[in-house]
Amino acid sequence: MGRCILHVDIDAFLASVEQLRDPALLGRPVAVGTGVVASRSYEAKACGVTTAMPLHEALRRCPELVVRPGDARLAERYRQRVAEILRRFTPVVEVCSLDDFYADLTGVPLRGEPVLAGGSAALEERSLMALCRTVRAQVRAETGLSVAQGLGATRTVARLATTKAKPGGIWEVLPGQELEFLAGFAIDAVPGIGPKTAAWLQQVGVTTVRELWAVDRELLVRSFGGRGDEIWHRCRGLDAAPVQATPTLHSISRETSFEPRAEVDSQQAPFLRSMLAYLLDRATSELRRQQLFARTVQVRLRHVDGVLGERSRTLAEPTDRTDRCMAVAAELLDELLLRRVLVRLCGISLTSLVPPRAQQGQLFGDDGQAARKLFAAVDAVRARHGFGALVLGDAAGLLGRVPTGKHGFVLRTPSLTK
Ligand SMILES: [Mg+2]
Image (cartoon, rainbow, N blue to C red; front, side):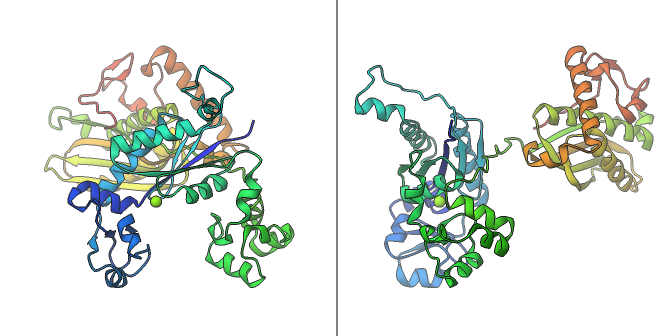
């Protein structure tokens, strides 16, 4: 069965966010940017304002233009809300750049199938168009934003279909119609063909996708390496790149506090190292449960004088292995312990979480395979007998010093990911 990929692009994103924040701007030409236009409302577009245009030029063309610096945090909240709406239809949602998303709808059961079959209305209802109209309505109702949507068998086709759907529309390229659809596009519209590649192709007389078909695959590979092969596939609607679900979690944190004067142990480096190992064990277990890898490990210590020390390090390769994270965390702890003031709290965070799919190259072949089996076995035992059934590595230093239960060590103030 062929794939079905939906590409969604928010219309005039940053300018729309400004209009939603300040309804007095609705219906007026608005641009967001400093120096150049990063985003403009459709009212501004009607006056000839385009993205990447210098602001002074934009104001010359459209004197009534309202220019705002934009609000990145507010925009991020809107972006996450659109991603959440898309996740109602499929778990495989990739949040791309500032304002666009891919969703893999392959095999998604279509709702709203009519009872009467055969008529043209029935055919329409069974297509993915109905789903797209629902997406559009929900985004509009819950955020106030307008989206354009493209449907196709590959990322490239879906994304180019969106350009035909702007603003606010839905454009579906049916299976088998990819070549006809792609033929007329200018080469620089194809994702992955940057200005340099486009300039090179234009020099040899290639300006449209149809003309690109005539260029020998070998020549593209010789000129652009692996990217050349990718271009060859993309311009034929044959690119197989999957939609990669963007994790909804940003970080996994675990921390606990001490009563420094009552718990004398807690102030010794070996104890802190053991506690860190235990917190990390808990965090990496959760990481594996969520099927994610972490790129960055952070350690923090809060001292009795209120000073918070934080250190973080990015790993050579993202991992979900407790031992790899602990090796880094132990180094960070040593650096933090140079400050000789009583410690009230210690915590760790795993951040820059990525799906393991991007890591598959490293999963096989090396000693990683054995480690993965080991941690899978650890996770299985704990799922059955409780987290406390096994104590790993340096965490053993807590035995006899911290009370234990079925669910592991009983910490004073356990704290989960916020
Ligand atoms: Mg957009």
